[in-house]
Length: 142
Image 1 (cartoon, rainbow, N blue to C red):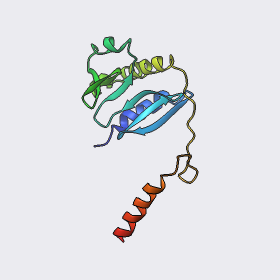
Image 2: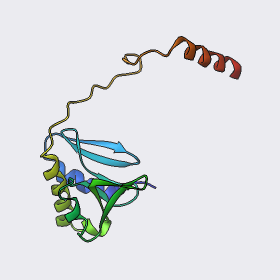
Image 3: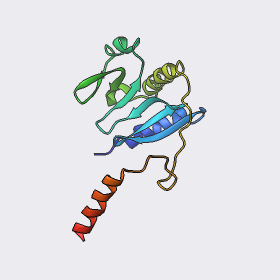
């Protein structure tokens, strides 16, 4: 199942004139970040996810077409899932995206991550014993 590309395009249009916006693939959907902080996402499970913060969370749950975001059966405080009927109109979608933008504006910007290739990775090398096991396993397969 794919995420709602039309909803993602509508959000892209709303965010197109803002600075610091990035789009990332996330768990089968697409996530929109502002200065490195998640603002909203279009979910593969349907609807949009909006980061509203812990203080606004209880107020948002009483809005129509809104439910708590759950991951692995546990609610994620500060994030809500808005069903498609909750953002059917452009005005409704703009309201939800603005709620996410308002919350992330209260957060400090995250420093940009440096992406590294495997060749220039700074991870520690595996122990000699672990390397020996990997080499032995490869030889057995051949």
